[in-house]
Image 1: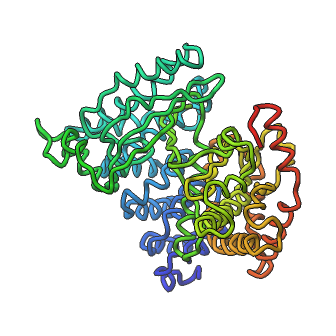
Image 2: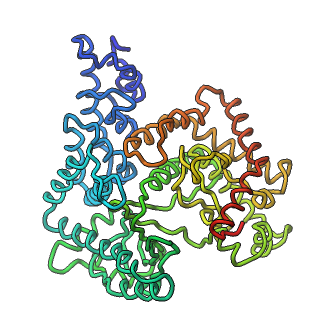
Image 3: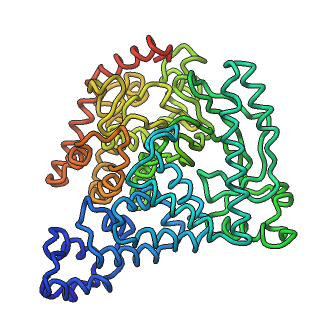
Length: 537
């Protein structure tokens, strides 16, 4: 292959085999001839291109970096929006300036990409949540890039940027405004008063969702969240889903002339009622680093895409989260759902009894549908939780929606970190007695066997994509997020059972399920949470 790479240059996957060991990049004259073919190689996936920009997986070389830049330029904005965190982290290895050039070029070709890049770069300037400790590796290059991107915005693009960033800064700042007030009625009043002062007079969107225009604010929805030290709050927005390209077009049109056209006029759009309009609640956090949640949900979104592609009937709900500056972020709420903790406070019985009272008795079709929804989502989240080692799975972090699906939220502990100093007493995924009760109460029950079968199928479906998952996590290691403690990639790779055949991998996953079933330690953890935080179990 090294002697005649042009014979396989039409196969994107062959490129990584050519450069994997780094020998061809050693600047020997005969190698440079072979290497020149890389520039015209067939385009690879965005994830492979990104991994060519970071030095952790492949050695960086001017030719491979130029190829990666060409490939990334060829993808549309809605594809690249999924990989913003890794694109920004690639700046750490940008000794030749190609990545900086790429980021400026991308920002010039899409306003929404520019906005997301700016928020992410602002977030990564500092190592801490209070913007006191600069990140020495990226502070200067990112500051330069932020200034370059903002200075190249002109006319309608500049007005769109100003409207979007000032509008959501005002909303995020409410958190600081209400913090001095004591928790309870006083803080709630301050929150309502502060939100009432925010007015929508042009096209904007929730930073977490560049696919939907904000039409209105529910001014009565301002609610401070339960938090001892910080002051996050929740607000509801009326949004209209339209997609990335359409939002970009409307955002520019709204700011082009003295009067916006009707299809880009917020007053006209606010009156529209169609199937694309819905209410979306979001939590605005200050003093919390949500970059880890962004990574977990990015990987969850990719897993969901894999399940859809192979038509596997399991369900994940990757809600949207975006970090907008150090310690600040917007988290979209899971619609029509309550945490298991809330259900526990409202009722004094277990989850199975809740299902019976909500959906009907064992013979009803509604209970069968809700149970199937529960099993489909349990299987997907169990595999996701196992692969990423999601911890801190108490009942405040587990939601049940109106149709019976389970949804996990809050990914502050994963990979190598867990609460209580990494004692390692939490199982590979949460499988409590009440969850098992809904699925038939024992491993031999048909419902539990369906759950186990879907877990195995989901695990086998994601295994062929293990390199992509590992690449995306590798590119984030230098952020030094608390979940990375030195062995993240090695352990992550092992959980995919890379050297096993499908049959052995299926057996391995079955053993994980069996261990979790037999594990009573999760019950112990719920009791611990109850003692410490009064979260019912």
